[in-house]
Amino acid sequence: MSLKSKQYTEVPGGITAPEGFLCHAVSAGIKDPAKPRLDLGLIYSTVPTVTAGMFTTNKVKAAPVRVCQAHLKLNDVRAILVNSGNANACTGPRGIQDAKAMATVTAQALNLKPTQVMVNSTGIIGLPMPIDRITAQIPDLAQGLSRERHQAVAEAIMTSDTKPKVLAIEVPLGSKTVRIAAIAKGAGMICPSMGTMLCFITTDAAIGLPELKKCTSDGVRNTFNRISIDGDTSTNDTVLVMANGTAGNRRISAGGPQYQAFAEALEYVMKRMSHMIVSDGERVTKFVEIAVRNAGTHMDARRVAETVANSLLVKCSWNGSDPNWGRVMHAIGYSRARIREESIDIYFDGHIATRNGIAADTPLDVLKAAVAKREFTVTIDLNIGSADYTVYTSDLSQEYVDFNCTEYAVRVASDDQAGAVSPWPRPH
View: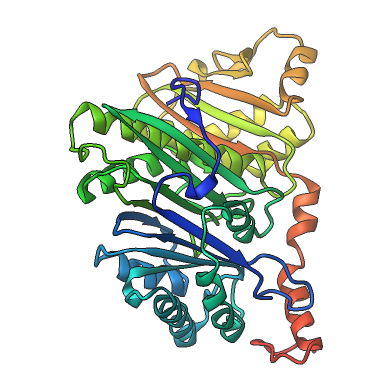
């Protein structure tokens, strides 16, 4: 679905724009107590919800993901607690205990059951969670809940993001108007099948759980599972959609026109979040849409799109504004898709670079200008079928390498110097 295919009214209010939702964020000093920043957020529904979720496909799953998956099965979610600065991943039994403690203390502060609280974390993998700093702040977090702190919560979930990612829209459903709102974080370790990203979506629509699960799954498949920055899928990826029914619309049922309208609006919100994530990729300079057309099968189209999107050579050429279609072609060739080399056409932002597998006569300056833009499309027409697939990706810069080459070592050294016990022996 194109971002321009539907016109929705954007509204202020962030994640609490839908009725019945409150939020708050505080600083718990999770990553560095000496440099406080917003790093702990809470989203709360004043009434019961139905909630759907999608999680990382990585076989190494963080403790909060495992706890969330268990709580979600009970279908009685009322709150989302989220921290940045520490992923609570690869932390063993202690990590599970810490995630459960976060849920328990939050539940006590809100007069809920621990299983009604979803726990999410993002940040550095492998370091123990400073749980005492977190639990000490939860009572104040719950006490400060309001509809006004939505921007603070969007900031609290950021890690390497340079800006908060927020959207709220209104959607007419019959005689009622419902709202859908989202916040997201993600800038690195992004790859189809979800990457290092969190997205929390609230809506005041009345909808059944089976219907919400389906449109959430479909939406994630068409949006968050079609983005790639660096080809990595992490341990904490989570998308949660909470619907509390306070808009008073007739309950949305599968197959009806209201379901279609709601599903399209939810996917629109997810796609906007996806685009924000890729555009804010760690030190990226280009947002690139890879559109594969006329493949023999849907799987072939997907293989080609994802292979080109994740090719480091291709990404580097985009960073240099180099319209190197040969790198695109070689990635197509190793994608494991069925192709005919002599049938492939490649376009850079609508300008043909390759016709029938060989160089077209488009002037080089035209192609260079196309890939020098901040946003452009690479269209790959395989000309052997009717299947299409689109992925959204970015370039790869030297600054990305510089940014990612020392974070863990610097963090462990910082903890050691502060008197903390490193989880790993120091190098000799």
